[in-house]
Length: 315
Image 1 (cartoon, helix red, strand yellow):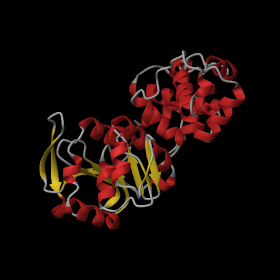
Image 2 (cartoon, rainbow, N blue to C red):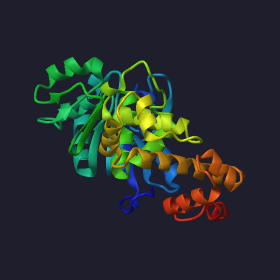
Image 3 (cartoon, rainbow, N blue to C red):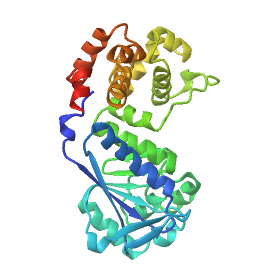
C-alpha cells in the first residue's frame, strides 16, 4: 500500500529531555519514525533533541545526549515529546511550566511520555482531560491532580494531548501515530521490523484478546507462512477464533480483510527480496507463495506500480 498523499509533508518532532530520562523510552519514541523513513524511502519525520538549559543530558543508565537549549532553539512543529523519568517532581518548577505553556502554541500536539504527564498537569494543561502516566505513579498522580481523569491505560490520545506510561507503551503510541498518519498496513510494516507482536502464545485463548492483539498474532502467523499461505479458515482455527471474528477484527483494525493483509505481507517480502538479493523472479515468487512468476508479477505491479524486474533495474 503506497504512502498516502496527505503524508507528503515532513512531520517535525521535538524531544524535550530531562536529567535521568529513560534511554529505552527515547529509543522507542524515535526508532519507529526512523524505520518509517526507511520503509517509505523518503523523509516522513524529522526530530531534534532539546532541554531547558541545553548541553549534555544524561539518561538514568548513563547515556549522554547532546541537546539544544530551549530558549535558543525556540522549537516548534507537530509533536513535542516530553520525557522525564526519575526525579520528575523536581522538574515541575516555574521554568518547565513556562516552557510547556509556550509549547502549547508552538506544537500541534504535546505528548507526555513515562512521567511526562506529571509535568503537563503541573503546567495546568491536563485539567478536564483523560491522561495516563507510568503505573507506579498513577495513584500519586490522581491524588495530586484531581482535575485530571487519570486512567490505567497503556496510552491515551485526548485531542491535542497524548500521554503514555513507559518505554513499551511509548513504542505502541509511536505505532499508533504512524498508523493514523499513513495507514494500518504501513504501521504493520514498521512493527514487523522490530518483531513487535511476533510471538504466538498458544496457551492463551485468543477470543479473549483485544482486536489489536489478535491482529498482531494473526499477522505474525502470516509472516511465518509466506511460502505456503494458509487458507484464512485454517489460520483462524489455529488462532482459536472463528473466521467471522477474525474478519471483523481485521476490518476494525486494518480496514482490510485478512486475505488482503496476507497478500500485502507476501508482496512486501517479495519487494525486499527484489531489492536486497539477486534471486530470480521465479524463485522469489515461490518463496512468497505464488504458483508462478507471472501471477506474482501481476500482483506486484498492481501493488507497487511496476514489475519486479522494473523495480530491480530502477534500484
